[in-house]
Image (cartoon, rainbow, N blue to C red; front, top):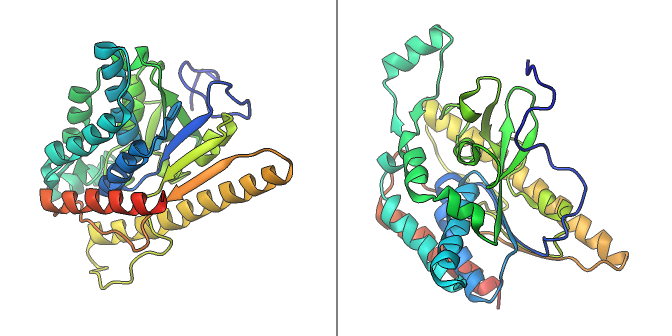
Length: 318
C-alpha cells in the first residue's frame, strides 16, 4: 500500500490539453529494436520536422531522453538547435555505446537467481546496471531541464498498475527512464528515489506507442516511430529455453499492444477530422519483423538496424 494518496512526482496523464504541444515525436518501445528507431528519427529530423515534445516508452524513452539532452546541449552551447545534427548524434550514440550484450545487461548467476527466487528476493534474470550507468553518464539533467524541448517517458507502477508519464522537471526523472527500460521478468523493478512503495517497470506493460498522451496534450501533428511490424515473425525457437520463451511471449504481447495503440490513435484522428479538427498522424514502422537477440548481438547488427530504420523512414516520408 502507498501511504500517501497524493505522493510527489508525476501523476497519470489526464485529458487537459497542453497549449505548448503542437508537434510531437512519439517513440515506441522495442528493446534493442530501438536502433531501428534511432535511424528513423534521423530521417524524420532531416525532413524538417521539429518537435515541441518528445514522448518515449522503453527503448523509446532512452532515445527520447538522449535526443532532448542533445538539443538542450546545443542550445546551451550555441543558442540554437541543429535538428539533423541531433539525429546524427542519436545514431552515433547507438554505434558507440551499444555494441554488445554487456553494454546493456549482464546475465545473473543461475544459482543466485534460483536462491533469490526461493527466498522471495527475485530481482530479474539480467543485471541492467550497464544501461543505467550509460544513461547516468550521458544525460546532464540540469541542462536537460533548461532546454526548450520537453520530454515525457512512460513507466508502469507495478503496485497499482497505473501508467505514469514523467518529465525532466520531475524529481528522480532518470529513475523513470531506468524503469521504462526495465523489461519485465528479465530485469528488476526500479524503486523511484529508492522508495520501495514506488516500484516501476517498462511502460510497455500498458502502452507501447505513447500516442494517447501526445493526443491528450493537444498535439496537432504527430510523428510516431514504432519498432514492431504488424505481425511477429514466424520462426523456429527453443520454446523450452526459459529466457527465449519469456522473450517470445513478450514479443507476442507487445506486438498486439502496439497494434492497438496505433489503431486507437488512427480512429481518434479520423473522428476528429469529421469534426473539423485536423490532427496529422504519421506512423513509421518496419514492414517485416525485426529480430535482435538481447543476449547475442554485435555492433554490425546495430548498424544494420540503424540503416534499415533510416531507409524505411526516408521512403515513408517521400
